Length: 314
Image (cartoon, rainbow, N blue to C red; front, side, top):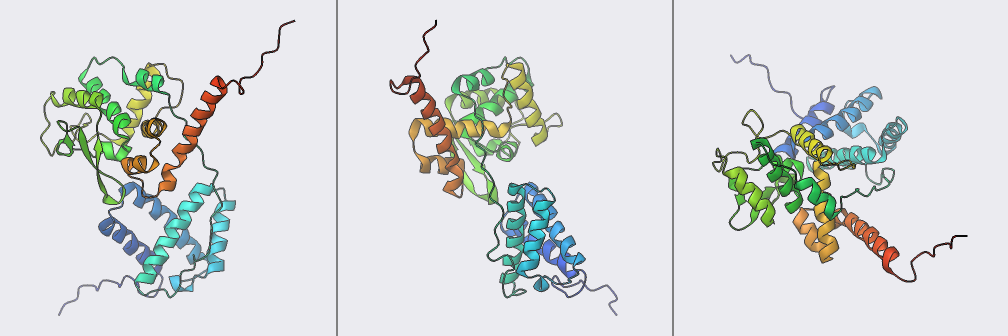
């Protein structure tokens, strides 16, 4: 006779139904939609807050959670000090869970329907100008680590890659002869991105150091494995300080610089959207504001009717 314990159904009634539904939802995001570990960890934290709130009501099944209760939860998190962008992410995680339960037939309606998070004031990223980028990238290359770092920074700026995309690159993803890199972005989406000549030269110098079969990571840490995100952030920060750049410099800033400088030169918003791998053009439109700021400065400095009159000295 088989006495092995029976697995509990994912949506079984009882005290474990809330957490089980969350676990099943996150697993579907991981397997079916290829969400990154970083994104999944954020969703897990957000949905754990929701589960704690639901258990305290108390409710034992998601179908018992209605719109007013969910609105009370979102408002309480905001009052607790959660910033508008974090509240937006929290509500997005909740919506995703409830939509998943709708598809599974567990819910007949989403309690998140019609709920809105507080609007976040969108901060424009502070970018480096072309001279500052040149100063950052042209640091002295004296060690094998410097060769790696030069190639890494050149690729960030040349191709506008995300930090996770750079850390995950293998030599098989690069076609240096054609000046292309194949990138696996958010949600597992694949795109081919141009690589500039200076980045190609820097990557060829790194390739010449050896240990670069197609399956090997392009950028390695001291253990020979793919370089960690924290190491990249530390190296970028250290190089910026060494080069005398007094702004906060981090890997994603180079993606901002790449996008802003591309848009400034081309004016092709759709092309920049495709280049960056943005699913929504609204994400790309932030760079039009940066471009306008640049245009305004040029106008103020050059247009005869924009120049301020200097007060004659007494």
